Length: 126
Image 1: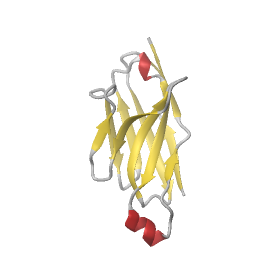
Image 2: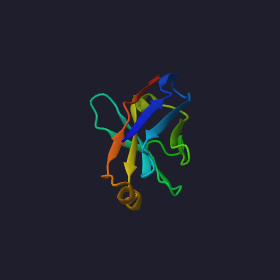
Image 3: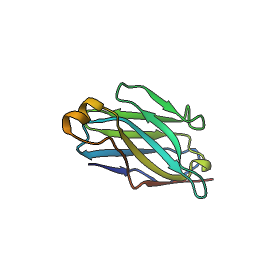
Image 4: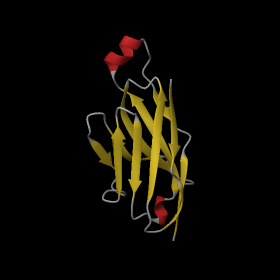
């Protein structure tokens, strides 16, 4: 089992910055991909940014150039630096971890799984 705990959300004015963090604890050795998703009221959950264990990352078009995802593989910490925030960035932000290391799962006798944190709220005022 993996537990994900997010922190860093809050209220900020448009143009401001926030830094979100996510710590993965528990049996986290088989995690390969980690990502941030967000869900605004009345909208579907969407991918904001993702980071693989090999260092590659991807971003939603709406946040490219403003958000930066970073990952500490050793500490299993995922961060999201959010700059030049806009009111449309207002949402609940969720950390996600995916166990993609098949060899690791086999060695531990685990079933592949995906985990979510409980979310941290980001509100950007205009």
